[in-house]
Image (cartoon, rainbow, N blue to C red):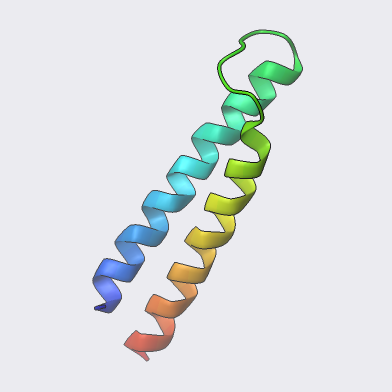
Length: 61
């Protein structure tokens, strides 16, 4: 994969993680009830995003 594609996928994964984190926060304060346990998805997508961004940086250098 090209560094540009890896960077794009990494940023997309981090954006999804941010949305899941906001949903989780809303569930914790009782504002919304959308998902069963979004914290696992937020952590997984965040880690995936960071790994992809690191891989993109290494391929670019």
